[in-house]
Length: 334
Image 1 (tube, rainbow, N blue to C red):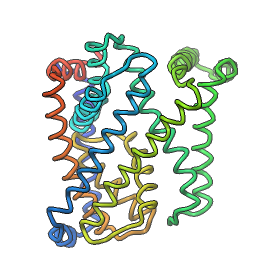
Image 2 (image 1 turned 135 degrees about the vertical axis):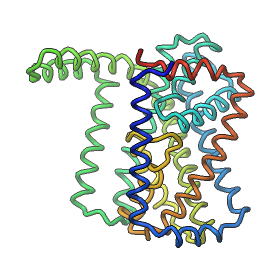
Image 3 (image 1 turned 90 degrees about the vertical axis):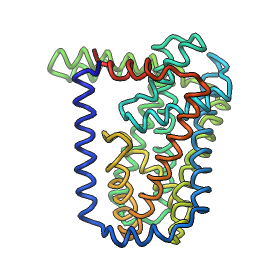
């Protein structure tokens, strides 16, 4: 059965999605957006779908490289698995896809479920690290409406995140001393206990990131290419509505969009996709809100169709027990 905790989470996310849609509608003209979308030629959808396919394949191959020291996963399996997980994350945005990956790897490749979930989390964390590094660099290249002061603050925050990750991965003894010092500053004893426990858990998990420079370079390169495929999705979406934009701008926009995935989302990312996309393009890059919204709607609808189709095909070929996976997802927290 669905736990009360997950039921409330899904309900909250859905309500949030509805609220975001209502807010978004206040800033756009649906008639203008509709007129723009009517100009889209069916043939222009194909490059968008190919970019979505390439994005899923590249991140799947990164997971294969990431897990290679532990298990050599079949390329076909890992691609289908990533496609199925993408669909589940899209439909049930409460880490359903990550749990599905962990269950499959545990059942088919005898990787302990707990460890596989940690490794999958760290594989996704590489996306976050790439965002911090690449966005920090591109902010100095791509013109935005943000002030230099605001950009500087963002870069300082991003750099702080990279420093913490570096210490947790390569200087764990120093980080433990830092955790011990910081824990003494916490007045409430319960907070101290949880702070230390979480820090130790992260230290153990991040140990898997201690790889050779060659392996780390390959993982980073694949991630850079995956975000290029993501940027291609928006590049071809803008072309489809007759409003081409610079690829580098859309690359940075995708990096910023990745950060919005940390915000709770409704099933299908309804509301959050429209609101965040319009905010990024209109607020950060100064594009017309109606034009940005037309692109986002085209991208969103294409993504829904593609992700569902590829996901269903992948579940069929992998013979995933979807019912069992959904039970694990929905019962999580009991």
